[in-house]
Length: 485
Image (cartoon, rainbow, N blue to C red):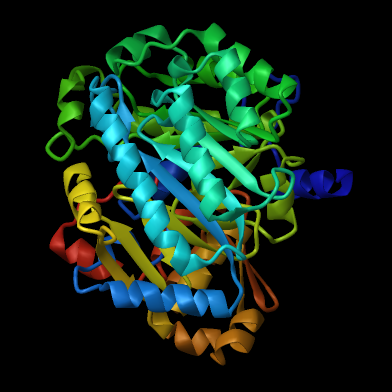
């Protein structure tokens, strides 16, 4: 393990930033000018193709055939369960969620979710191992203890969820909704990974986004998670929120680092009040400027490296000795629609309204409307709304993009063996951009490998965009995309 840690830290080239709280003052790895040069609109690449390519011509037969092929290949499975309800509205939120105080509405949703489990399980079979289970939302812990227990019972009854020392079982938590005692219940239900949605420790920022969270609550939950022997603790933060500035972000992240979580996720806020009505409640006059956002990211990213964390993927920093850190070092890190996983290959089954599935060469998504979701299930059908079956070109480009994100490299020899292609010939149109990335210090060429450099990791989405065959059409149509940074 120590060898892996040493390799990762050497590979990252952690260079603390001037002015940060550290005794080792070297040149910063990232600066404002570098990030400003490479910031532009682009997809987040939770998948490739992205969900923008899903279409309504998708059918249940497509879904069934994909599951049958996956079963024949004896592929492992991951389950995602979407629980969309929240008790209050966070103004920044762009998730598929329902704000309600109506417990009967939540009970009805849970009944329909259990019905979906019963419909999907026979297609999957009880023998296939579930190596990952994740509950997201919304606020999954808005459901009461008996309902959480009931849901886990039905999942365990219908699927072959591996023992907690072999499976990753995670849940997204709003710290305001969980006590130390409830955290003990979650551990008893089998959860071994938790993700705490903090967003920011600054009280003025919290008030501005309508999500006031005392620091002590996060501190006691992290401490309790250690005592309950959760395998990992992740803290989620957002930059670009109202009232944030360089100093408040540095202070927030210093507090986060002091808690020593295994993973810190740092997401960029995308302000789209026309699409997400709750965002209209934010005071736009106190949103950070684009220049301020760049400064915050530059400083915080260097702060994370100075603290010994390693950059992985598009939005996360992990401890080198964490499960994801080791998986990254060993080339086992993978990404699905809901985050990073340490398993080489596992198809994803999504359950609940808006949940996405990724089964072999097929992506599909349930209807986002809770009302429609329950209506379709009430008729005895699965609530599939859209999907896409990937072609050969999609699969090749997916391999390249996911390898860049998860392994920080592209192996041209590996692609030739897998798809019988010559990389330079197949991606002839992309060669000018690739050469530019090398010239800009984002990529390094080493024999059959292109490595993402330490500096390039923070802008890896820009590198991925070069291989996205659908992106030019979206740019022509003026599709609104998030910023790379």
